[in-house]
Length: 136
Ligand code: 5GP
Ligand code: ZN
Image 1 (cartoon, rainbow, N blue to C red):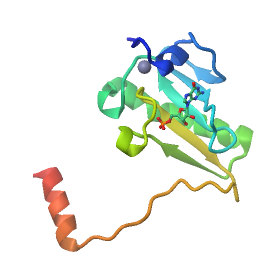
Image 2: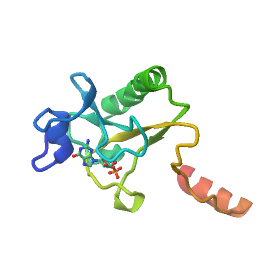
Image 3: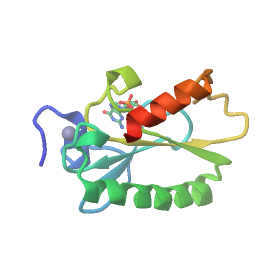
Image 4: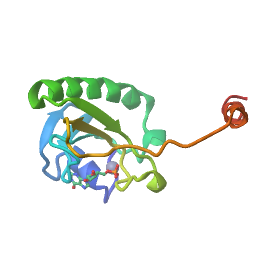
């Protein structure tokens, strides 16, 4: 199901043209317009889901299989040295387009990109507390 006024719904369903790398009945894979590196791609489901929490299990299951297929193509065709998968959920996490998308960012030696986080510190007590909060 598409959502009105969602740009990725329009792109995924071909109403707005895009540089398409792959398409099937459920997904379109496009080149990002502001690429972090050469070949930066986005996997878009054709049905609207705002984020991972809204993504149906069937699509969630398929998306990583598709990512693997695209990763193989990126390696073979672009000769990247590595690859980051990034998937932002919510404004706080940096999501700017509220239609689920999986970033595939090919990495090249010395590409100058920095897709990272600042490692923090914790304690055994805090690890136990978080573990209990999530499992009990
Ligand atoms: P987010 O920050 O939501 O995880 O990522 C959104 C991504 O979508 C950004 O990398 C941005 O460059 C890309 N983007 C936004 N609008 C368009 C568009 O109209 N076409 C394409 N191909 N990419 C877009
Ligand atoms: Zn949408």
